[in-house]
Image (cartoon, each protein chain N blue to C red):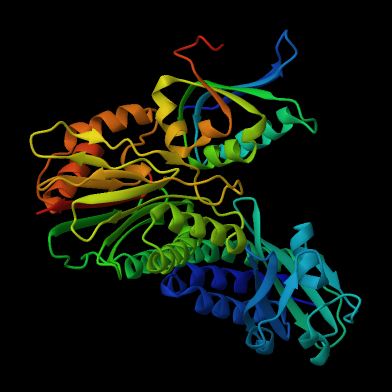
Length: 400
Length: 105
């Protein structure tokens, strides 16, 4: 059906375009341009890309040429079902010359009277990330040459698609993190507060957060936490957990109570998520604080004229373990001029170095100084000017 | 950069199932650690001795795996990682023994 010489020439053109002009396009535009060319190349009436959504396990129509309705209607097909689902599940090309309810799921294919289809998996790094398929409105038998050609196109676009999705994920996670973690904490009379967030060099943005807010009682709530995992998913879950903690903080001045409610919320609405957190409530006079730790390392306290100490906060289970145990508070005085440093494990955990060593080093780096300067000097001392492996959140405060 | 992870499983002379890990448990091999731990636990209700005394580093994914099966685990860990199990509260659920160096081998 297709002249091999003509096809090879077209494939060469396709590759040139992929390399040059398309390098600047976003994922939708990239796919759309390639679909137009794949359609021409195979003399097909339609060409569609469905990408695998890892959360749901469904293939989602993402770009189309000739069957734009599939994208506009948000057609989804479960892995293993329908035409695209079978291509993806088998990770093999599939050609059909009978399009009806027994071979396809998408109603658009039936409405549009597609007579024959050829689909190939989009594979990168050994994983199926989606399906590329073409359709013909008139009966047609796709040849082995057609299959080979379409697979070449899919092999060509799969890595570019994956790379763009990955960078989109990273950029979105970064934007989300920035919107949730203000770099300037609120002005609180009697307290100096400084914060830092650093994404991990290998993992990018993760699920670390800090928070500080005034409570209706006049007290101050301070939270630092770490959602397990990284990337967009961890950042999204972090956003929900952080905001739920704020809501419960409005209802209770008891940190253990706030974390108990938060844990219950995570069990019900964030199955599979696990997080560590520490939540402190400083009383309205700023003289004392109550802390409750959920699987999280305690803060360091440097008081003027005293040795820096890791506060002996009683440990409670992390959030999301599905094990219900009573949570406890530990109370401490907050001395005038004393600096308190909250952090996430990325600060004290280094590969091939045990956490005990990191904590000792941190204790040596924390002094009763200006919180902003403290954040800067602690990061320098702990990271040794190397990029952080895991993401890090820091919150330092001093009573003045 | 990552120290390879070596996991061995078996049954001690006293009949207690055990799993020993050597190296680092991080993002790249936490899934392998979880799978081997599940296999070693089997379907029964017996306890499993998890020897982590020669694990230099374990990340939060590894901790999550230990939490998921905590009630059936006896964990041996080096003093250097003791703080991790204490902060996390894992020592409240699993039996944790702090063992220096290779004494647990």
